[in-house]
Amino acid sequence: MKRIGLLSDTHGYWDERYLKYFEECDEIWHAGDIGSKEVMDRLMAFKPFRGVYGNIDGQDIRKILPEINRFMLEGADILIKHIGGYPGKYDSQIKKILNISAPTLFISGHSHILKVKYDKEYGMLHINPGAAGKYGFHTVRTIVRFSIEQGNFSDLEVIELKD
Image 1 (cartoon, one colour):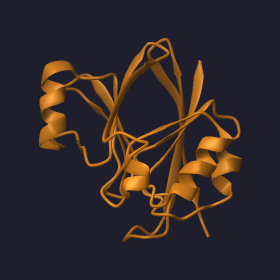
Image 2 (cartoon, helix red, strand yellow):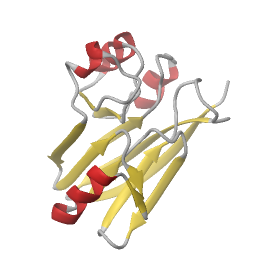
Image 3 (cartoon, helix red, strand yellow):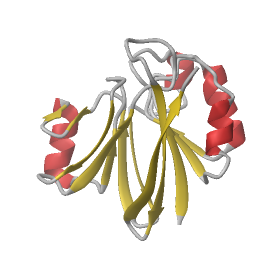
Image 4 (tube, one colour):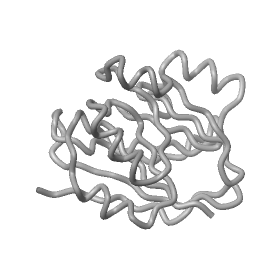
């Protein structure tokens, strides 16, 4: 079993509570728009890290992280892309990938809107963790924790970071 800490759209903002809430996690995943290499470096120094770059991320982050990250973990096929859409409204690049081989879990960011939804058409779970940073129209900052074991997802928690 692996416990995952998931966030997106930090936009260069650091909150010490990322470390507090992800202390019990085995890995941290970032769904893009990290916003500064310093934020990425701090997360990477804390726990094993996986992520993708987002549309606001500069070359310093793009040299390290891919646009699309697909990997297997605990029997689950994971796909992460910052601008990926959501069930019923996927980005065209993601739609092509899904039509060829849908993952077990698709993670996106960008919208700053927290969304956890099972996509019946592709037989996969979709998670957008919302925005963990302060930049944007969102009024509540959110991060997500969940577990993966033998290809199954459980114990999903949404954490509101109130100021």
